[in-house]
Image (cartoon, rainbow, N blue to C red; front, side):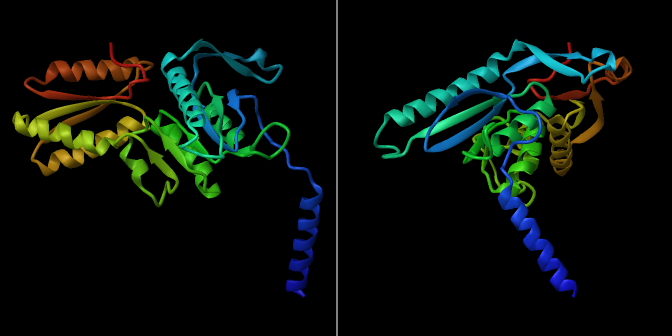
Length: 271
């Protein structure tokens, strides 16, 4: 009796799904540039920054908007557009097949995730013309979140700047690829540099982001193998005066110590 009930519910659910029209759910409207083609490449970039929040005194749904273009991310997007046009122009590269693109803009980490969801869901008219691959993002943390969405759908993700060594784990991120080496090579280079100059006593200052924290952990592991002592690890943020004061006091109190400063370029740095 139990199996019959399960089969009936399965048939009812299938009939209902066949009668329903597929539609995109959630916030949309993140697409900035597009071009139709036989194969569609998606891209997620932080084309704008400096986000301003409008809370409406909590009498209506809050919203935010961005006021400044991010020149570096815009350059990445324009490079993708130029590359696709050049490939389509050459009839020998993909004969009989044209490439298209849909490039999405997200200001803030949550909007970048929404943009990635919109990219894999299709256009606003329905769940059609999904992307075959997605390019982005620059941030390792954002790329990690995006790949958690793409991997179950078997959609490849190629990042041009996410260098966290953690993303090399194919069990966690099976469809993630990149065109830059991971931070593990950078860490090994730093350790060998310190070994060459006989810098055996170091301190580390790092920002409070996944990129910096993972890089710091990798560095400490490799440094200990070479007999390099890590005196301390100090996280910093420009929004916390207490943490900044602690760093300054530590730097003034310890003499003859070499420092490793680990941060992501797009983040705020120490002044």
